[in-house]
Length: 273
Image (tube, rainbow, N blue to C red; front, side, top):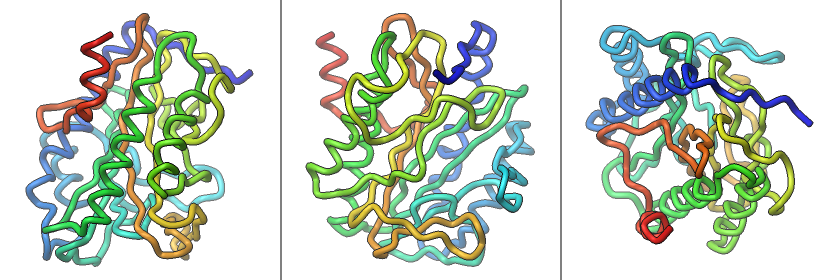
């Protein structure tokens, strides 16, 4: 049994603030995500907004887990066949690109972690469908969260929904516990069997962040030591929220004015409950 920290009321209040701020970075950067901008410029704008406007610290900057080199930028920009951890740089976005922007801020010691998919110009029908299904996967996983449920329940619904659509789930990267530490227990797998793995308890906080590939699930790591791409060069999509297990269900902590609403079927299920 892994030791999963149960957050105090003070922790939860801090995590709500950090989560909202992370989401507000995505609101801020949205109008800039268009053809002609570089991923490096998106990083610069987000970095300045975090440090100058929000007084937050970009958690990825110089983040260095064992076996890695320090991450060199403030955000992750994963374009097209990049699954995750794309390093911002000289890449110019062009019409038809899809890009995931992954933001983690630190405020008063607490981490807020969230990501969204963006379409540059008009996305292809295929890219739009992949983004939509991935968004639904995230929300189906979140909707399973309540005390007494299991982590396997979250992974199972995500895997079922993705594979039914003809897509695959990346196995090597998963959601994670979060608080004063960027990545802590538990690991939140986006595949699995219902009723397995840890039982959820009120006060746990973790991310749900499925990475879904249009092709096969196999990955390849780039020479920079961070960027992960689909092995078959197919498109990949990801959405991410940080979620609190409440006494009765869940609360999404990474919400702000510009956060896209849950899919209609999630809202209807919540209204019926």
